[in-house]
Image (cartoon, rainbow, N blue to C red; front, side, top):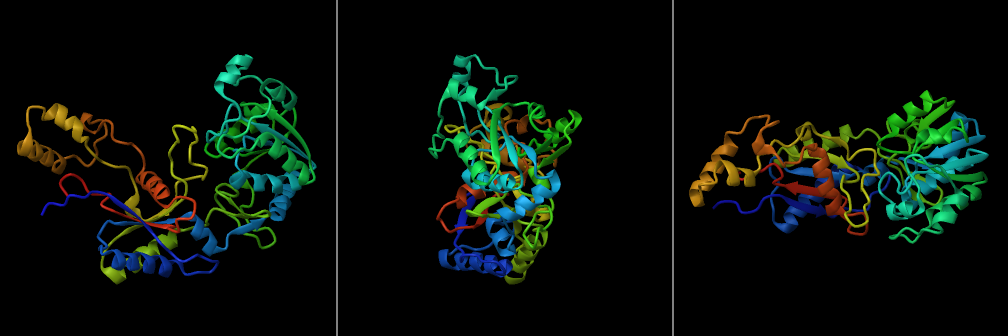
Amino acid sequence: MERKVGTISRGIRCPIIRQGDDLVKIVTDSVLEAADSEGFEIRDKDVIAVTESIVARAQGNYASVEAIAEDVRARLGGETIGVIFPILSRNRFAICLRGIAMGAKKVILMLSYPSDEVGNELVSLDQLDAAGINPYSDVLTLKKYRELFGENKHPFTGVDYVAYYEELIKEAGAEAEIIFANDCRSILPFAKKVINCDIHTRARTKRLLKAAGAEIALGMDDILTSPVNGSGCNEKYGLLGSNKSTEYTIKLFPRDCTGLVMDIQKEILDRTEKHVEVMVYGDGAFKDPVGKIWELADPCVSAASTPGLDGTPNEVKLKYLADNDFKDLSGDALKQAISNRIREKKDNLTGDMAAQGTTPRRITDLIGSLCDLTSGSGDKGTPVVLIQGYFDNYVS
């Protein structure tokens, strides 16, 4: 019988992961037990995806705010530092800011506006228009910001992040000054030593700061790139991708995960004779249309993946074929014509009109987004996702 189901994404329940746990065994056992429980089979080209959170936990990749403070103090001198373009997040940034402030005497915090990098809004564009403010050129003091816009609480969290971050810096023992600007170089009249906290534009920001005369320009990816007094670290991403663990501890993005994904792939092959693909995923790369928040606060969607997940999809658009190439066909004749077109498609469809409208994104980014939506970030208890049929098409 012809198969009637395409892609299936299943959240897989797992035990609570602790430092030192054998993730290869736990992930493999959990997937195979789920298959037995739910009555499905593991197939070739299935994808097993593991959330970065449990990988970092198993690695024990944690650090204290004191470790952050010591690294910041050693790298920037412990006096006045500029901290620019942070995202507005209690989970992602607030605890990092606490550690940064503990490593300085004064923090000049420069917030982008009307929103942060991932779309959390401080003020609306309509408010800027009404106030006659040009966000591309105007630098606002905290006093001016309050005069124009008053208190603005985040619509989802109810937090006034301006007040929250100011108080947090003071609690950490540093003097706080807050300004608002969107040109990274606007910080330089206030501080010559700068930590830029933007995620996906960080390389450009550092380049512009250094060219404009910054004495030191570091990104979040330059802090905790090596252990401090035995702390965790991330050689590639530093503090980027970290999350709050406790009030004084962060969980860092996992370190090299290539061995893990290859070992899980091998274990599944040994136990089922099926060749699956495996990846470690973080935030999905998608944007909320109502809150306008872009989900990707991690430095990348996939921390590691097996080679079969390299590349981008190579697909033709069925509706294009139906409306154009085969517009005079219907029924079985249309199905046969489209099926033949899929079987005969080139290995690289770049520039082919029949491929227009297909998503030109990396496979790991697409699958990672699906996994993030499947597992969620709350209490579902499914830190592993099994995806079946992703590489199928109309003729599979």
